[in-house]
Image 1 (cartoon, rainbow over the protein chains, first blue to last red):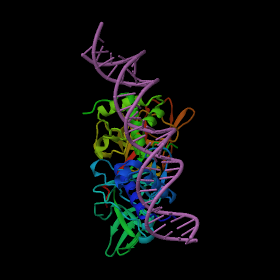
Image 2: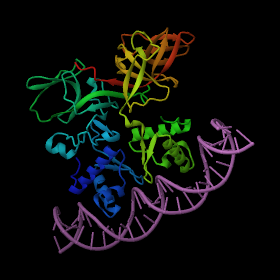
Image 3: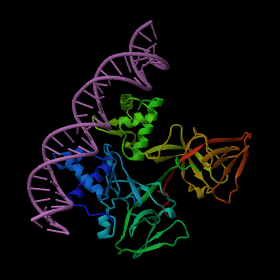
Image 4: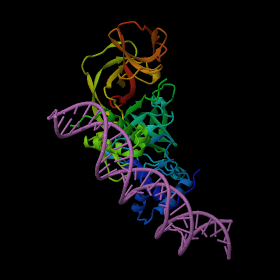
Length: 207
Length: 207
DNA sequence: TAAGTTAGCATACAAATGTATGGCAATTAT
DNA sequence: ATAATTGCCATACATTTGTATGCTAACTTA
């Protein structure tokens, strides 16, 4: 269980996420200081130490821009999208958001598709495996039969989508798995987007 | 129109892509120098300048790790599919491109690689399915257990490769298909290349 | 009251980093 | 034959960057 962040620490973490997901590379101490109007890098330095102590980031000592996020390792690792479409954070899983809302929140809506690297094998029913990169379009209305990414009770699933009268059915490709039926009013359910493609690199998978 | 990169410049660009895509943040001059065994950062500096001049990267002056790739301004790059390849029973290969796919730029195409569309389901236990696009690199030596594309009697197959004493075994993941054993001296057999990546488009699969 | 946390500042310093310049050998192009 | 490019090295330098230390102030907690 991670400790609570203060308001300022949280806003700094938000800025970190913003930069890492949006611009692609982590900021320096000076960058952060400039953004928040600090006259001194040491101020940021201390905030980083506090945030790291609380377990939200990991730092590589002496390495410029050596900041990693420890969050959102759960199911997806968002990949930076390049160019003008770079829409930051497709899927940010804030621990405190889970605690209160019981639902990972989508912080920033990309205008177009984004990439997610899949972690874990919770999606293997749809023949998507750990390490695969899925291309997700969050701006399309799911049609019956399309493969969607959904969050259901803090778990991510990729399944075929079928809309019924008052409920939604998520069907696995694998016949051994029974369809999941969700009432439309169910709170802990959210469609993240539609999977439009999958890419898998074989380079490390010899054998 | 971009100018050609030299061999060394290309390998440096590959390293850049590797780091940016893989590790998430661009390397410093020192990082690159160390990786290639250069005793001096200035060497890398000059290579960067050359690569930038040829239009493959963009640099932010005075900024540490300030390297951006210019390649991926486009999310998808059209690529010709050279033919169809059988994962089950051999199929004939077409001389000309039969189709094109828009390949995501995260799917790295090494030079001389080409695309083939898989037909049949004998590789489905390797999670490659009919309709998938495989990226084939013809310049790599196959290692045991790797998935290769091979020509056998004028037909192409995709299977796992195992080298034995005097023969080569091509194994399907699907137990329904028996391994193909080829004597090394057999003339009508040729390894086309190694499957380095897979791309699957979901767009036409709705319903 | 005393101790701790949070939030900011200033200063100092070593190391990392990007950059500029010049030199040299090998190759390629004109 | 000469010029240009490529590939690498060395040295030097100004910034940038991360880090360490100490100081002040406000607020919270024990």
